[in-house]
Length: 141
Image 1 (cartoon, rainbow, N blue to C red):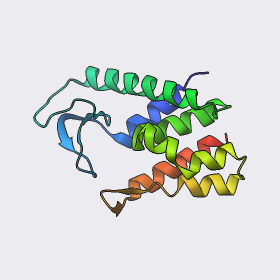
Image 2 (cartoon, rainbow, N blue to C red):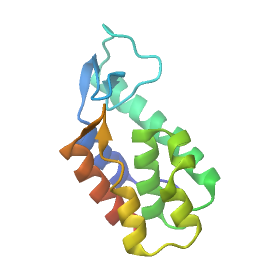
Image 3 (tube, one colour):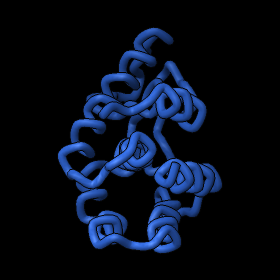
């Protein structure tokens, strides 16, 4: 099973694209569509490389999420890959969301767990609230 074009498109919208490195809401140097690995302030990339980095990031997180063995549908894979891309695979592995999914939690319980991940840099962000709503919906499609 693979993530869908729907995820790629949604991440491009949710992340937005910046071709010059900036600090995200948590203070992490970021470039393109939310790419953080190896980014230094002052870096510049092209729109082409922004898309390529996003595709590579998605592939990495898709593999990591697949290894967890909990995604049974494309929607679940998309939702969990999006979340892992945003919070990191380590945090997902330790999350009560993953425990709830593994324990066969209800739709309401799983949705509540997604919606806990709305803070960055200690602040509740509207963009993260919207992202978690999309992920929770996508998980059950």
